Amino acid sequence: MEESLVKKIVEGTLIVFFLLLAIVFYYAFDLENIFYEKQVKTISQADIEANRALDYSGKKAGEGIKNISTKEEWENTYVTEYITVTPVNITKTNVYSLANWADHYTKRRTGGAGRKRRSVQTELFDYDDNYRRYYVIELEDGTNILAQMNRGIANKIAKGETITLPLGKKTGLTSTAKKMLSAIIEDKNISDTYVLYTIDDEWSKNNATKIFVIKMAVSTILFFTLSVSFLMIVDKFIFKEN
Image (cartoon, rainbow, N blue to C red; front, side, top):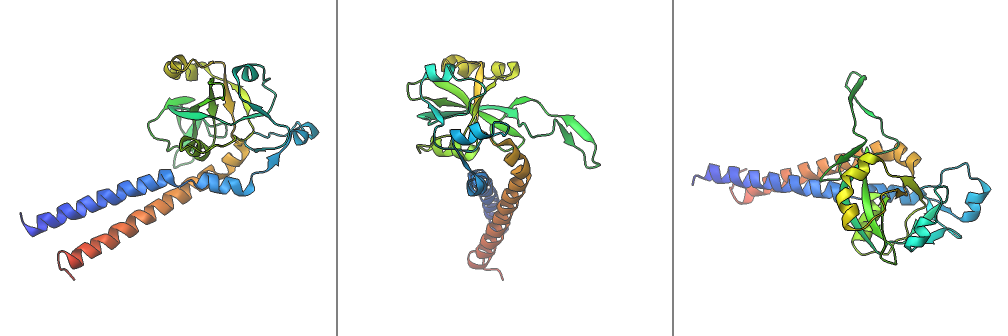
């Protein structure tokens, strides 16, 4: 095999490897959680009672917040109550709902409205910040319920960390979401009426684009830096080129 062909194969393999590495880094880099934890406030039940007009979803649960651990407690919770859960286990689904802060239409380069976004969709990878994944969380008594949360928190729970979720409320599940989640709902005997929503919509709306741009920029820089550096090393020490 000619040396030039071997060189092309080696270089191509390195480029593909570092591209995959950059993609893995993009998904593993939990910038959302890093930013959010720096400003998240702890909210007690007394704070909620003092001003019920504010939206406290996504805030850290403080003193007096009901921590749901059984099926009975979940079913007896009103949709107006702020609650929290310390999940025993978590399961990711491949179903996502359009984020509350996301535009229902994409934008063209000219500034006009583009295609309409689906209200619910399925995706293999969690890459679109305009959508939020549905998770299945297990309560202490073995009951499974649906929940939506910060993806960084979900990843930590999946790794075995014991985490109390941010404040959330019971939110109705749409008919489209029910249909797409029907298999896992039936398999895990989940109520298809409500989902526990624990996302701070206002914060996410203000930071989603910034987080995406920074993560994409860092991943791109990582890809080019590693690719160029290792290609230069290969050229100099393996193929003996200047």
